[in-house]
Amino acid sequence: MEKALRSLKGNQPSFLTFKNATSTDIEVFWLDYQGQRKKYASLAPGKEWGISTFATHPWVLAEAGGKPLGVVVAGKKPGSLEGHY
Image (cartoon, rainbow, N blue to C red):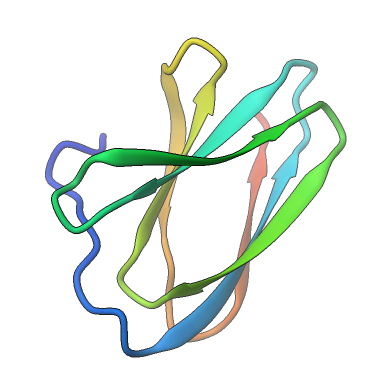
């Protein structure tokens, strides 16, 4: 799911909102310029969290144990990702 992804440029600002609509905690990771996960947040059920980021930067939602649930790549316009997994 995320093996070929990594952040590219950091020159086009964007904003993402992550919402946990599951019944368990989830973790939010940014994939850096080498494609490595960097943990940014843990979200309890029903919580949301937003972050300023850049277009082309991928983000991963994962179970507490690290299993990926979804991936989103930030675009030029603000967006959101809601976990219903």
